[in-house]
Image (cartoon, rainbow, N blue to C red; front, side, top):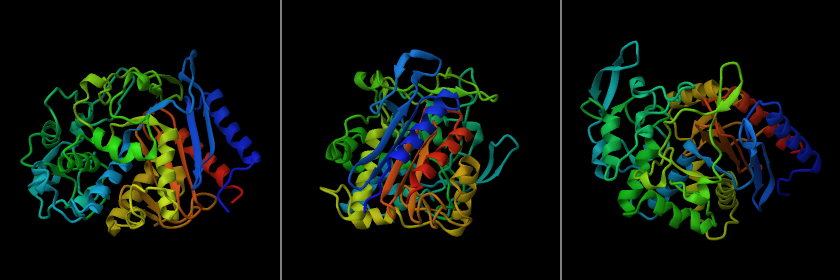
Length: 419
């Protein structure tokens, strides 16, 4: 029997979401769940502007900045190329991205987090390491490359993301910024030896572009979105998307909420989007994101019509690939940013594009589920064992919001209570 939501569960989920917004615990929110056959729950609460009730209620078609939710879709595109035989998981990426040849491993930093010394990497970065984030490309590798943004605090976005790329500036400018003054692209560790949340998906996206001869936008539209009937997703805000965009909200240390005043985010002006960032640049509705998650469930269940990936490939996304050191790193990261997830000790892993729990989480998702989220406090999971996937999202900074994390825990427990 397929995973279902009872009328009692629906009332509970509705209440959690309504109270979250009415109490000003969060700005506007979307929560949706699907089984293999189709959506089983979708609900929105709140207005586009946190302090303006006349700004209009959000709905299922409201557009979100996905941030790192983009990474899963880039991984799907990359794995399509592997299936087509155009690249292998063990292919050294420098053969396609020479900018990643001769990287250096950071050996010492100063107290401010600036890189002091490096040594040439002994190993080459492979394509598969971009997909499971063991490449060494790390957001934290050079703290000095991150800057404060806006009048309401630190956004914590890397300079390669907030740089406004000019016409003609593409991946080469991205790598110039990433390299900085160093002799090669700086890595946090030898490729393949650990896990790092970082720029791997952006690099995978550039590889998709160079192999396909198409922009990541065009590749996604033709090979992922069109086959699934998705029309809301894009790297640039077309007029019909821009008017549906949910603006960012900022939470102060005292818990109060106000409109985000920081100007520096990924380029939004569609006339100026010259670089498609496969790690952070995509916009779209969470309803459409749920369509992608449902398609993965269908492929796993063997019921997908015109699947965009094979069952074997999707299985690899749910197969742990991290060495023990990497598993410890991802576990520490989860505990820092999403402590309410409740992963049993030693159960955190990563496959291609998905963080995995290798044990059941009591009262929640089952062993073998995959999840991730986005910088502006969005998150999703896919649970093939239970046959359910869900998305919860707002547009709130700073990232790693504890109240958002606790609400997701409450929603997930309500979703699973009758299973």
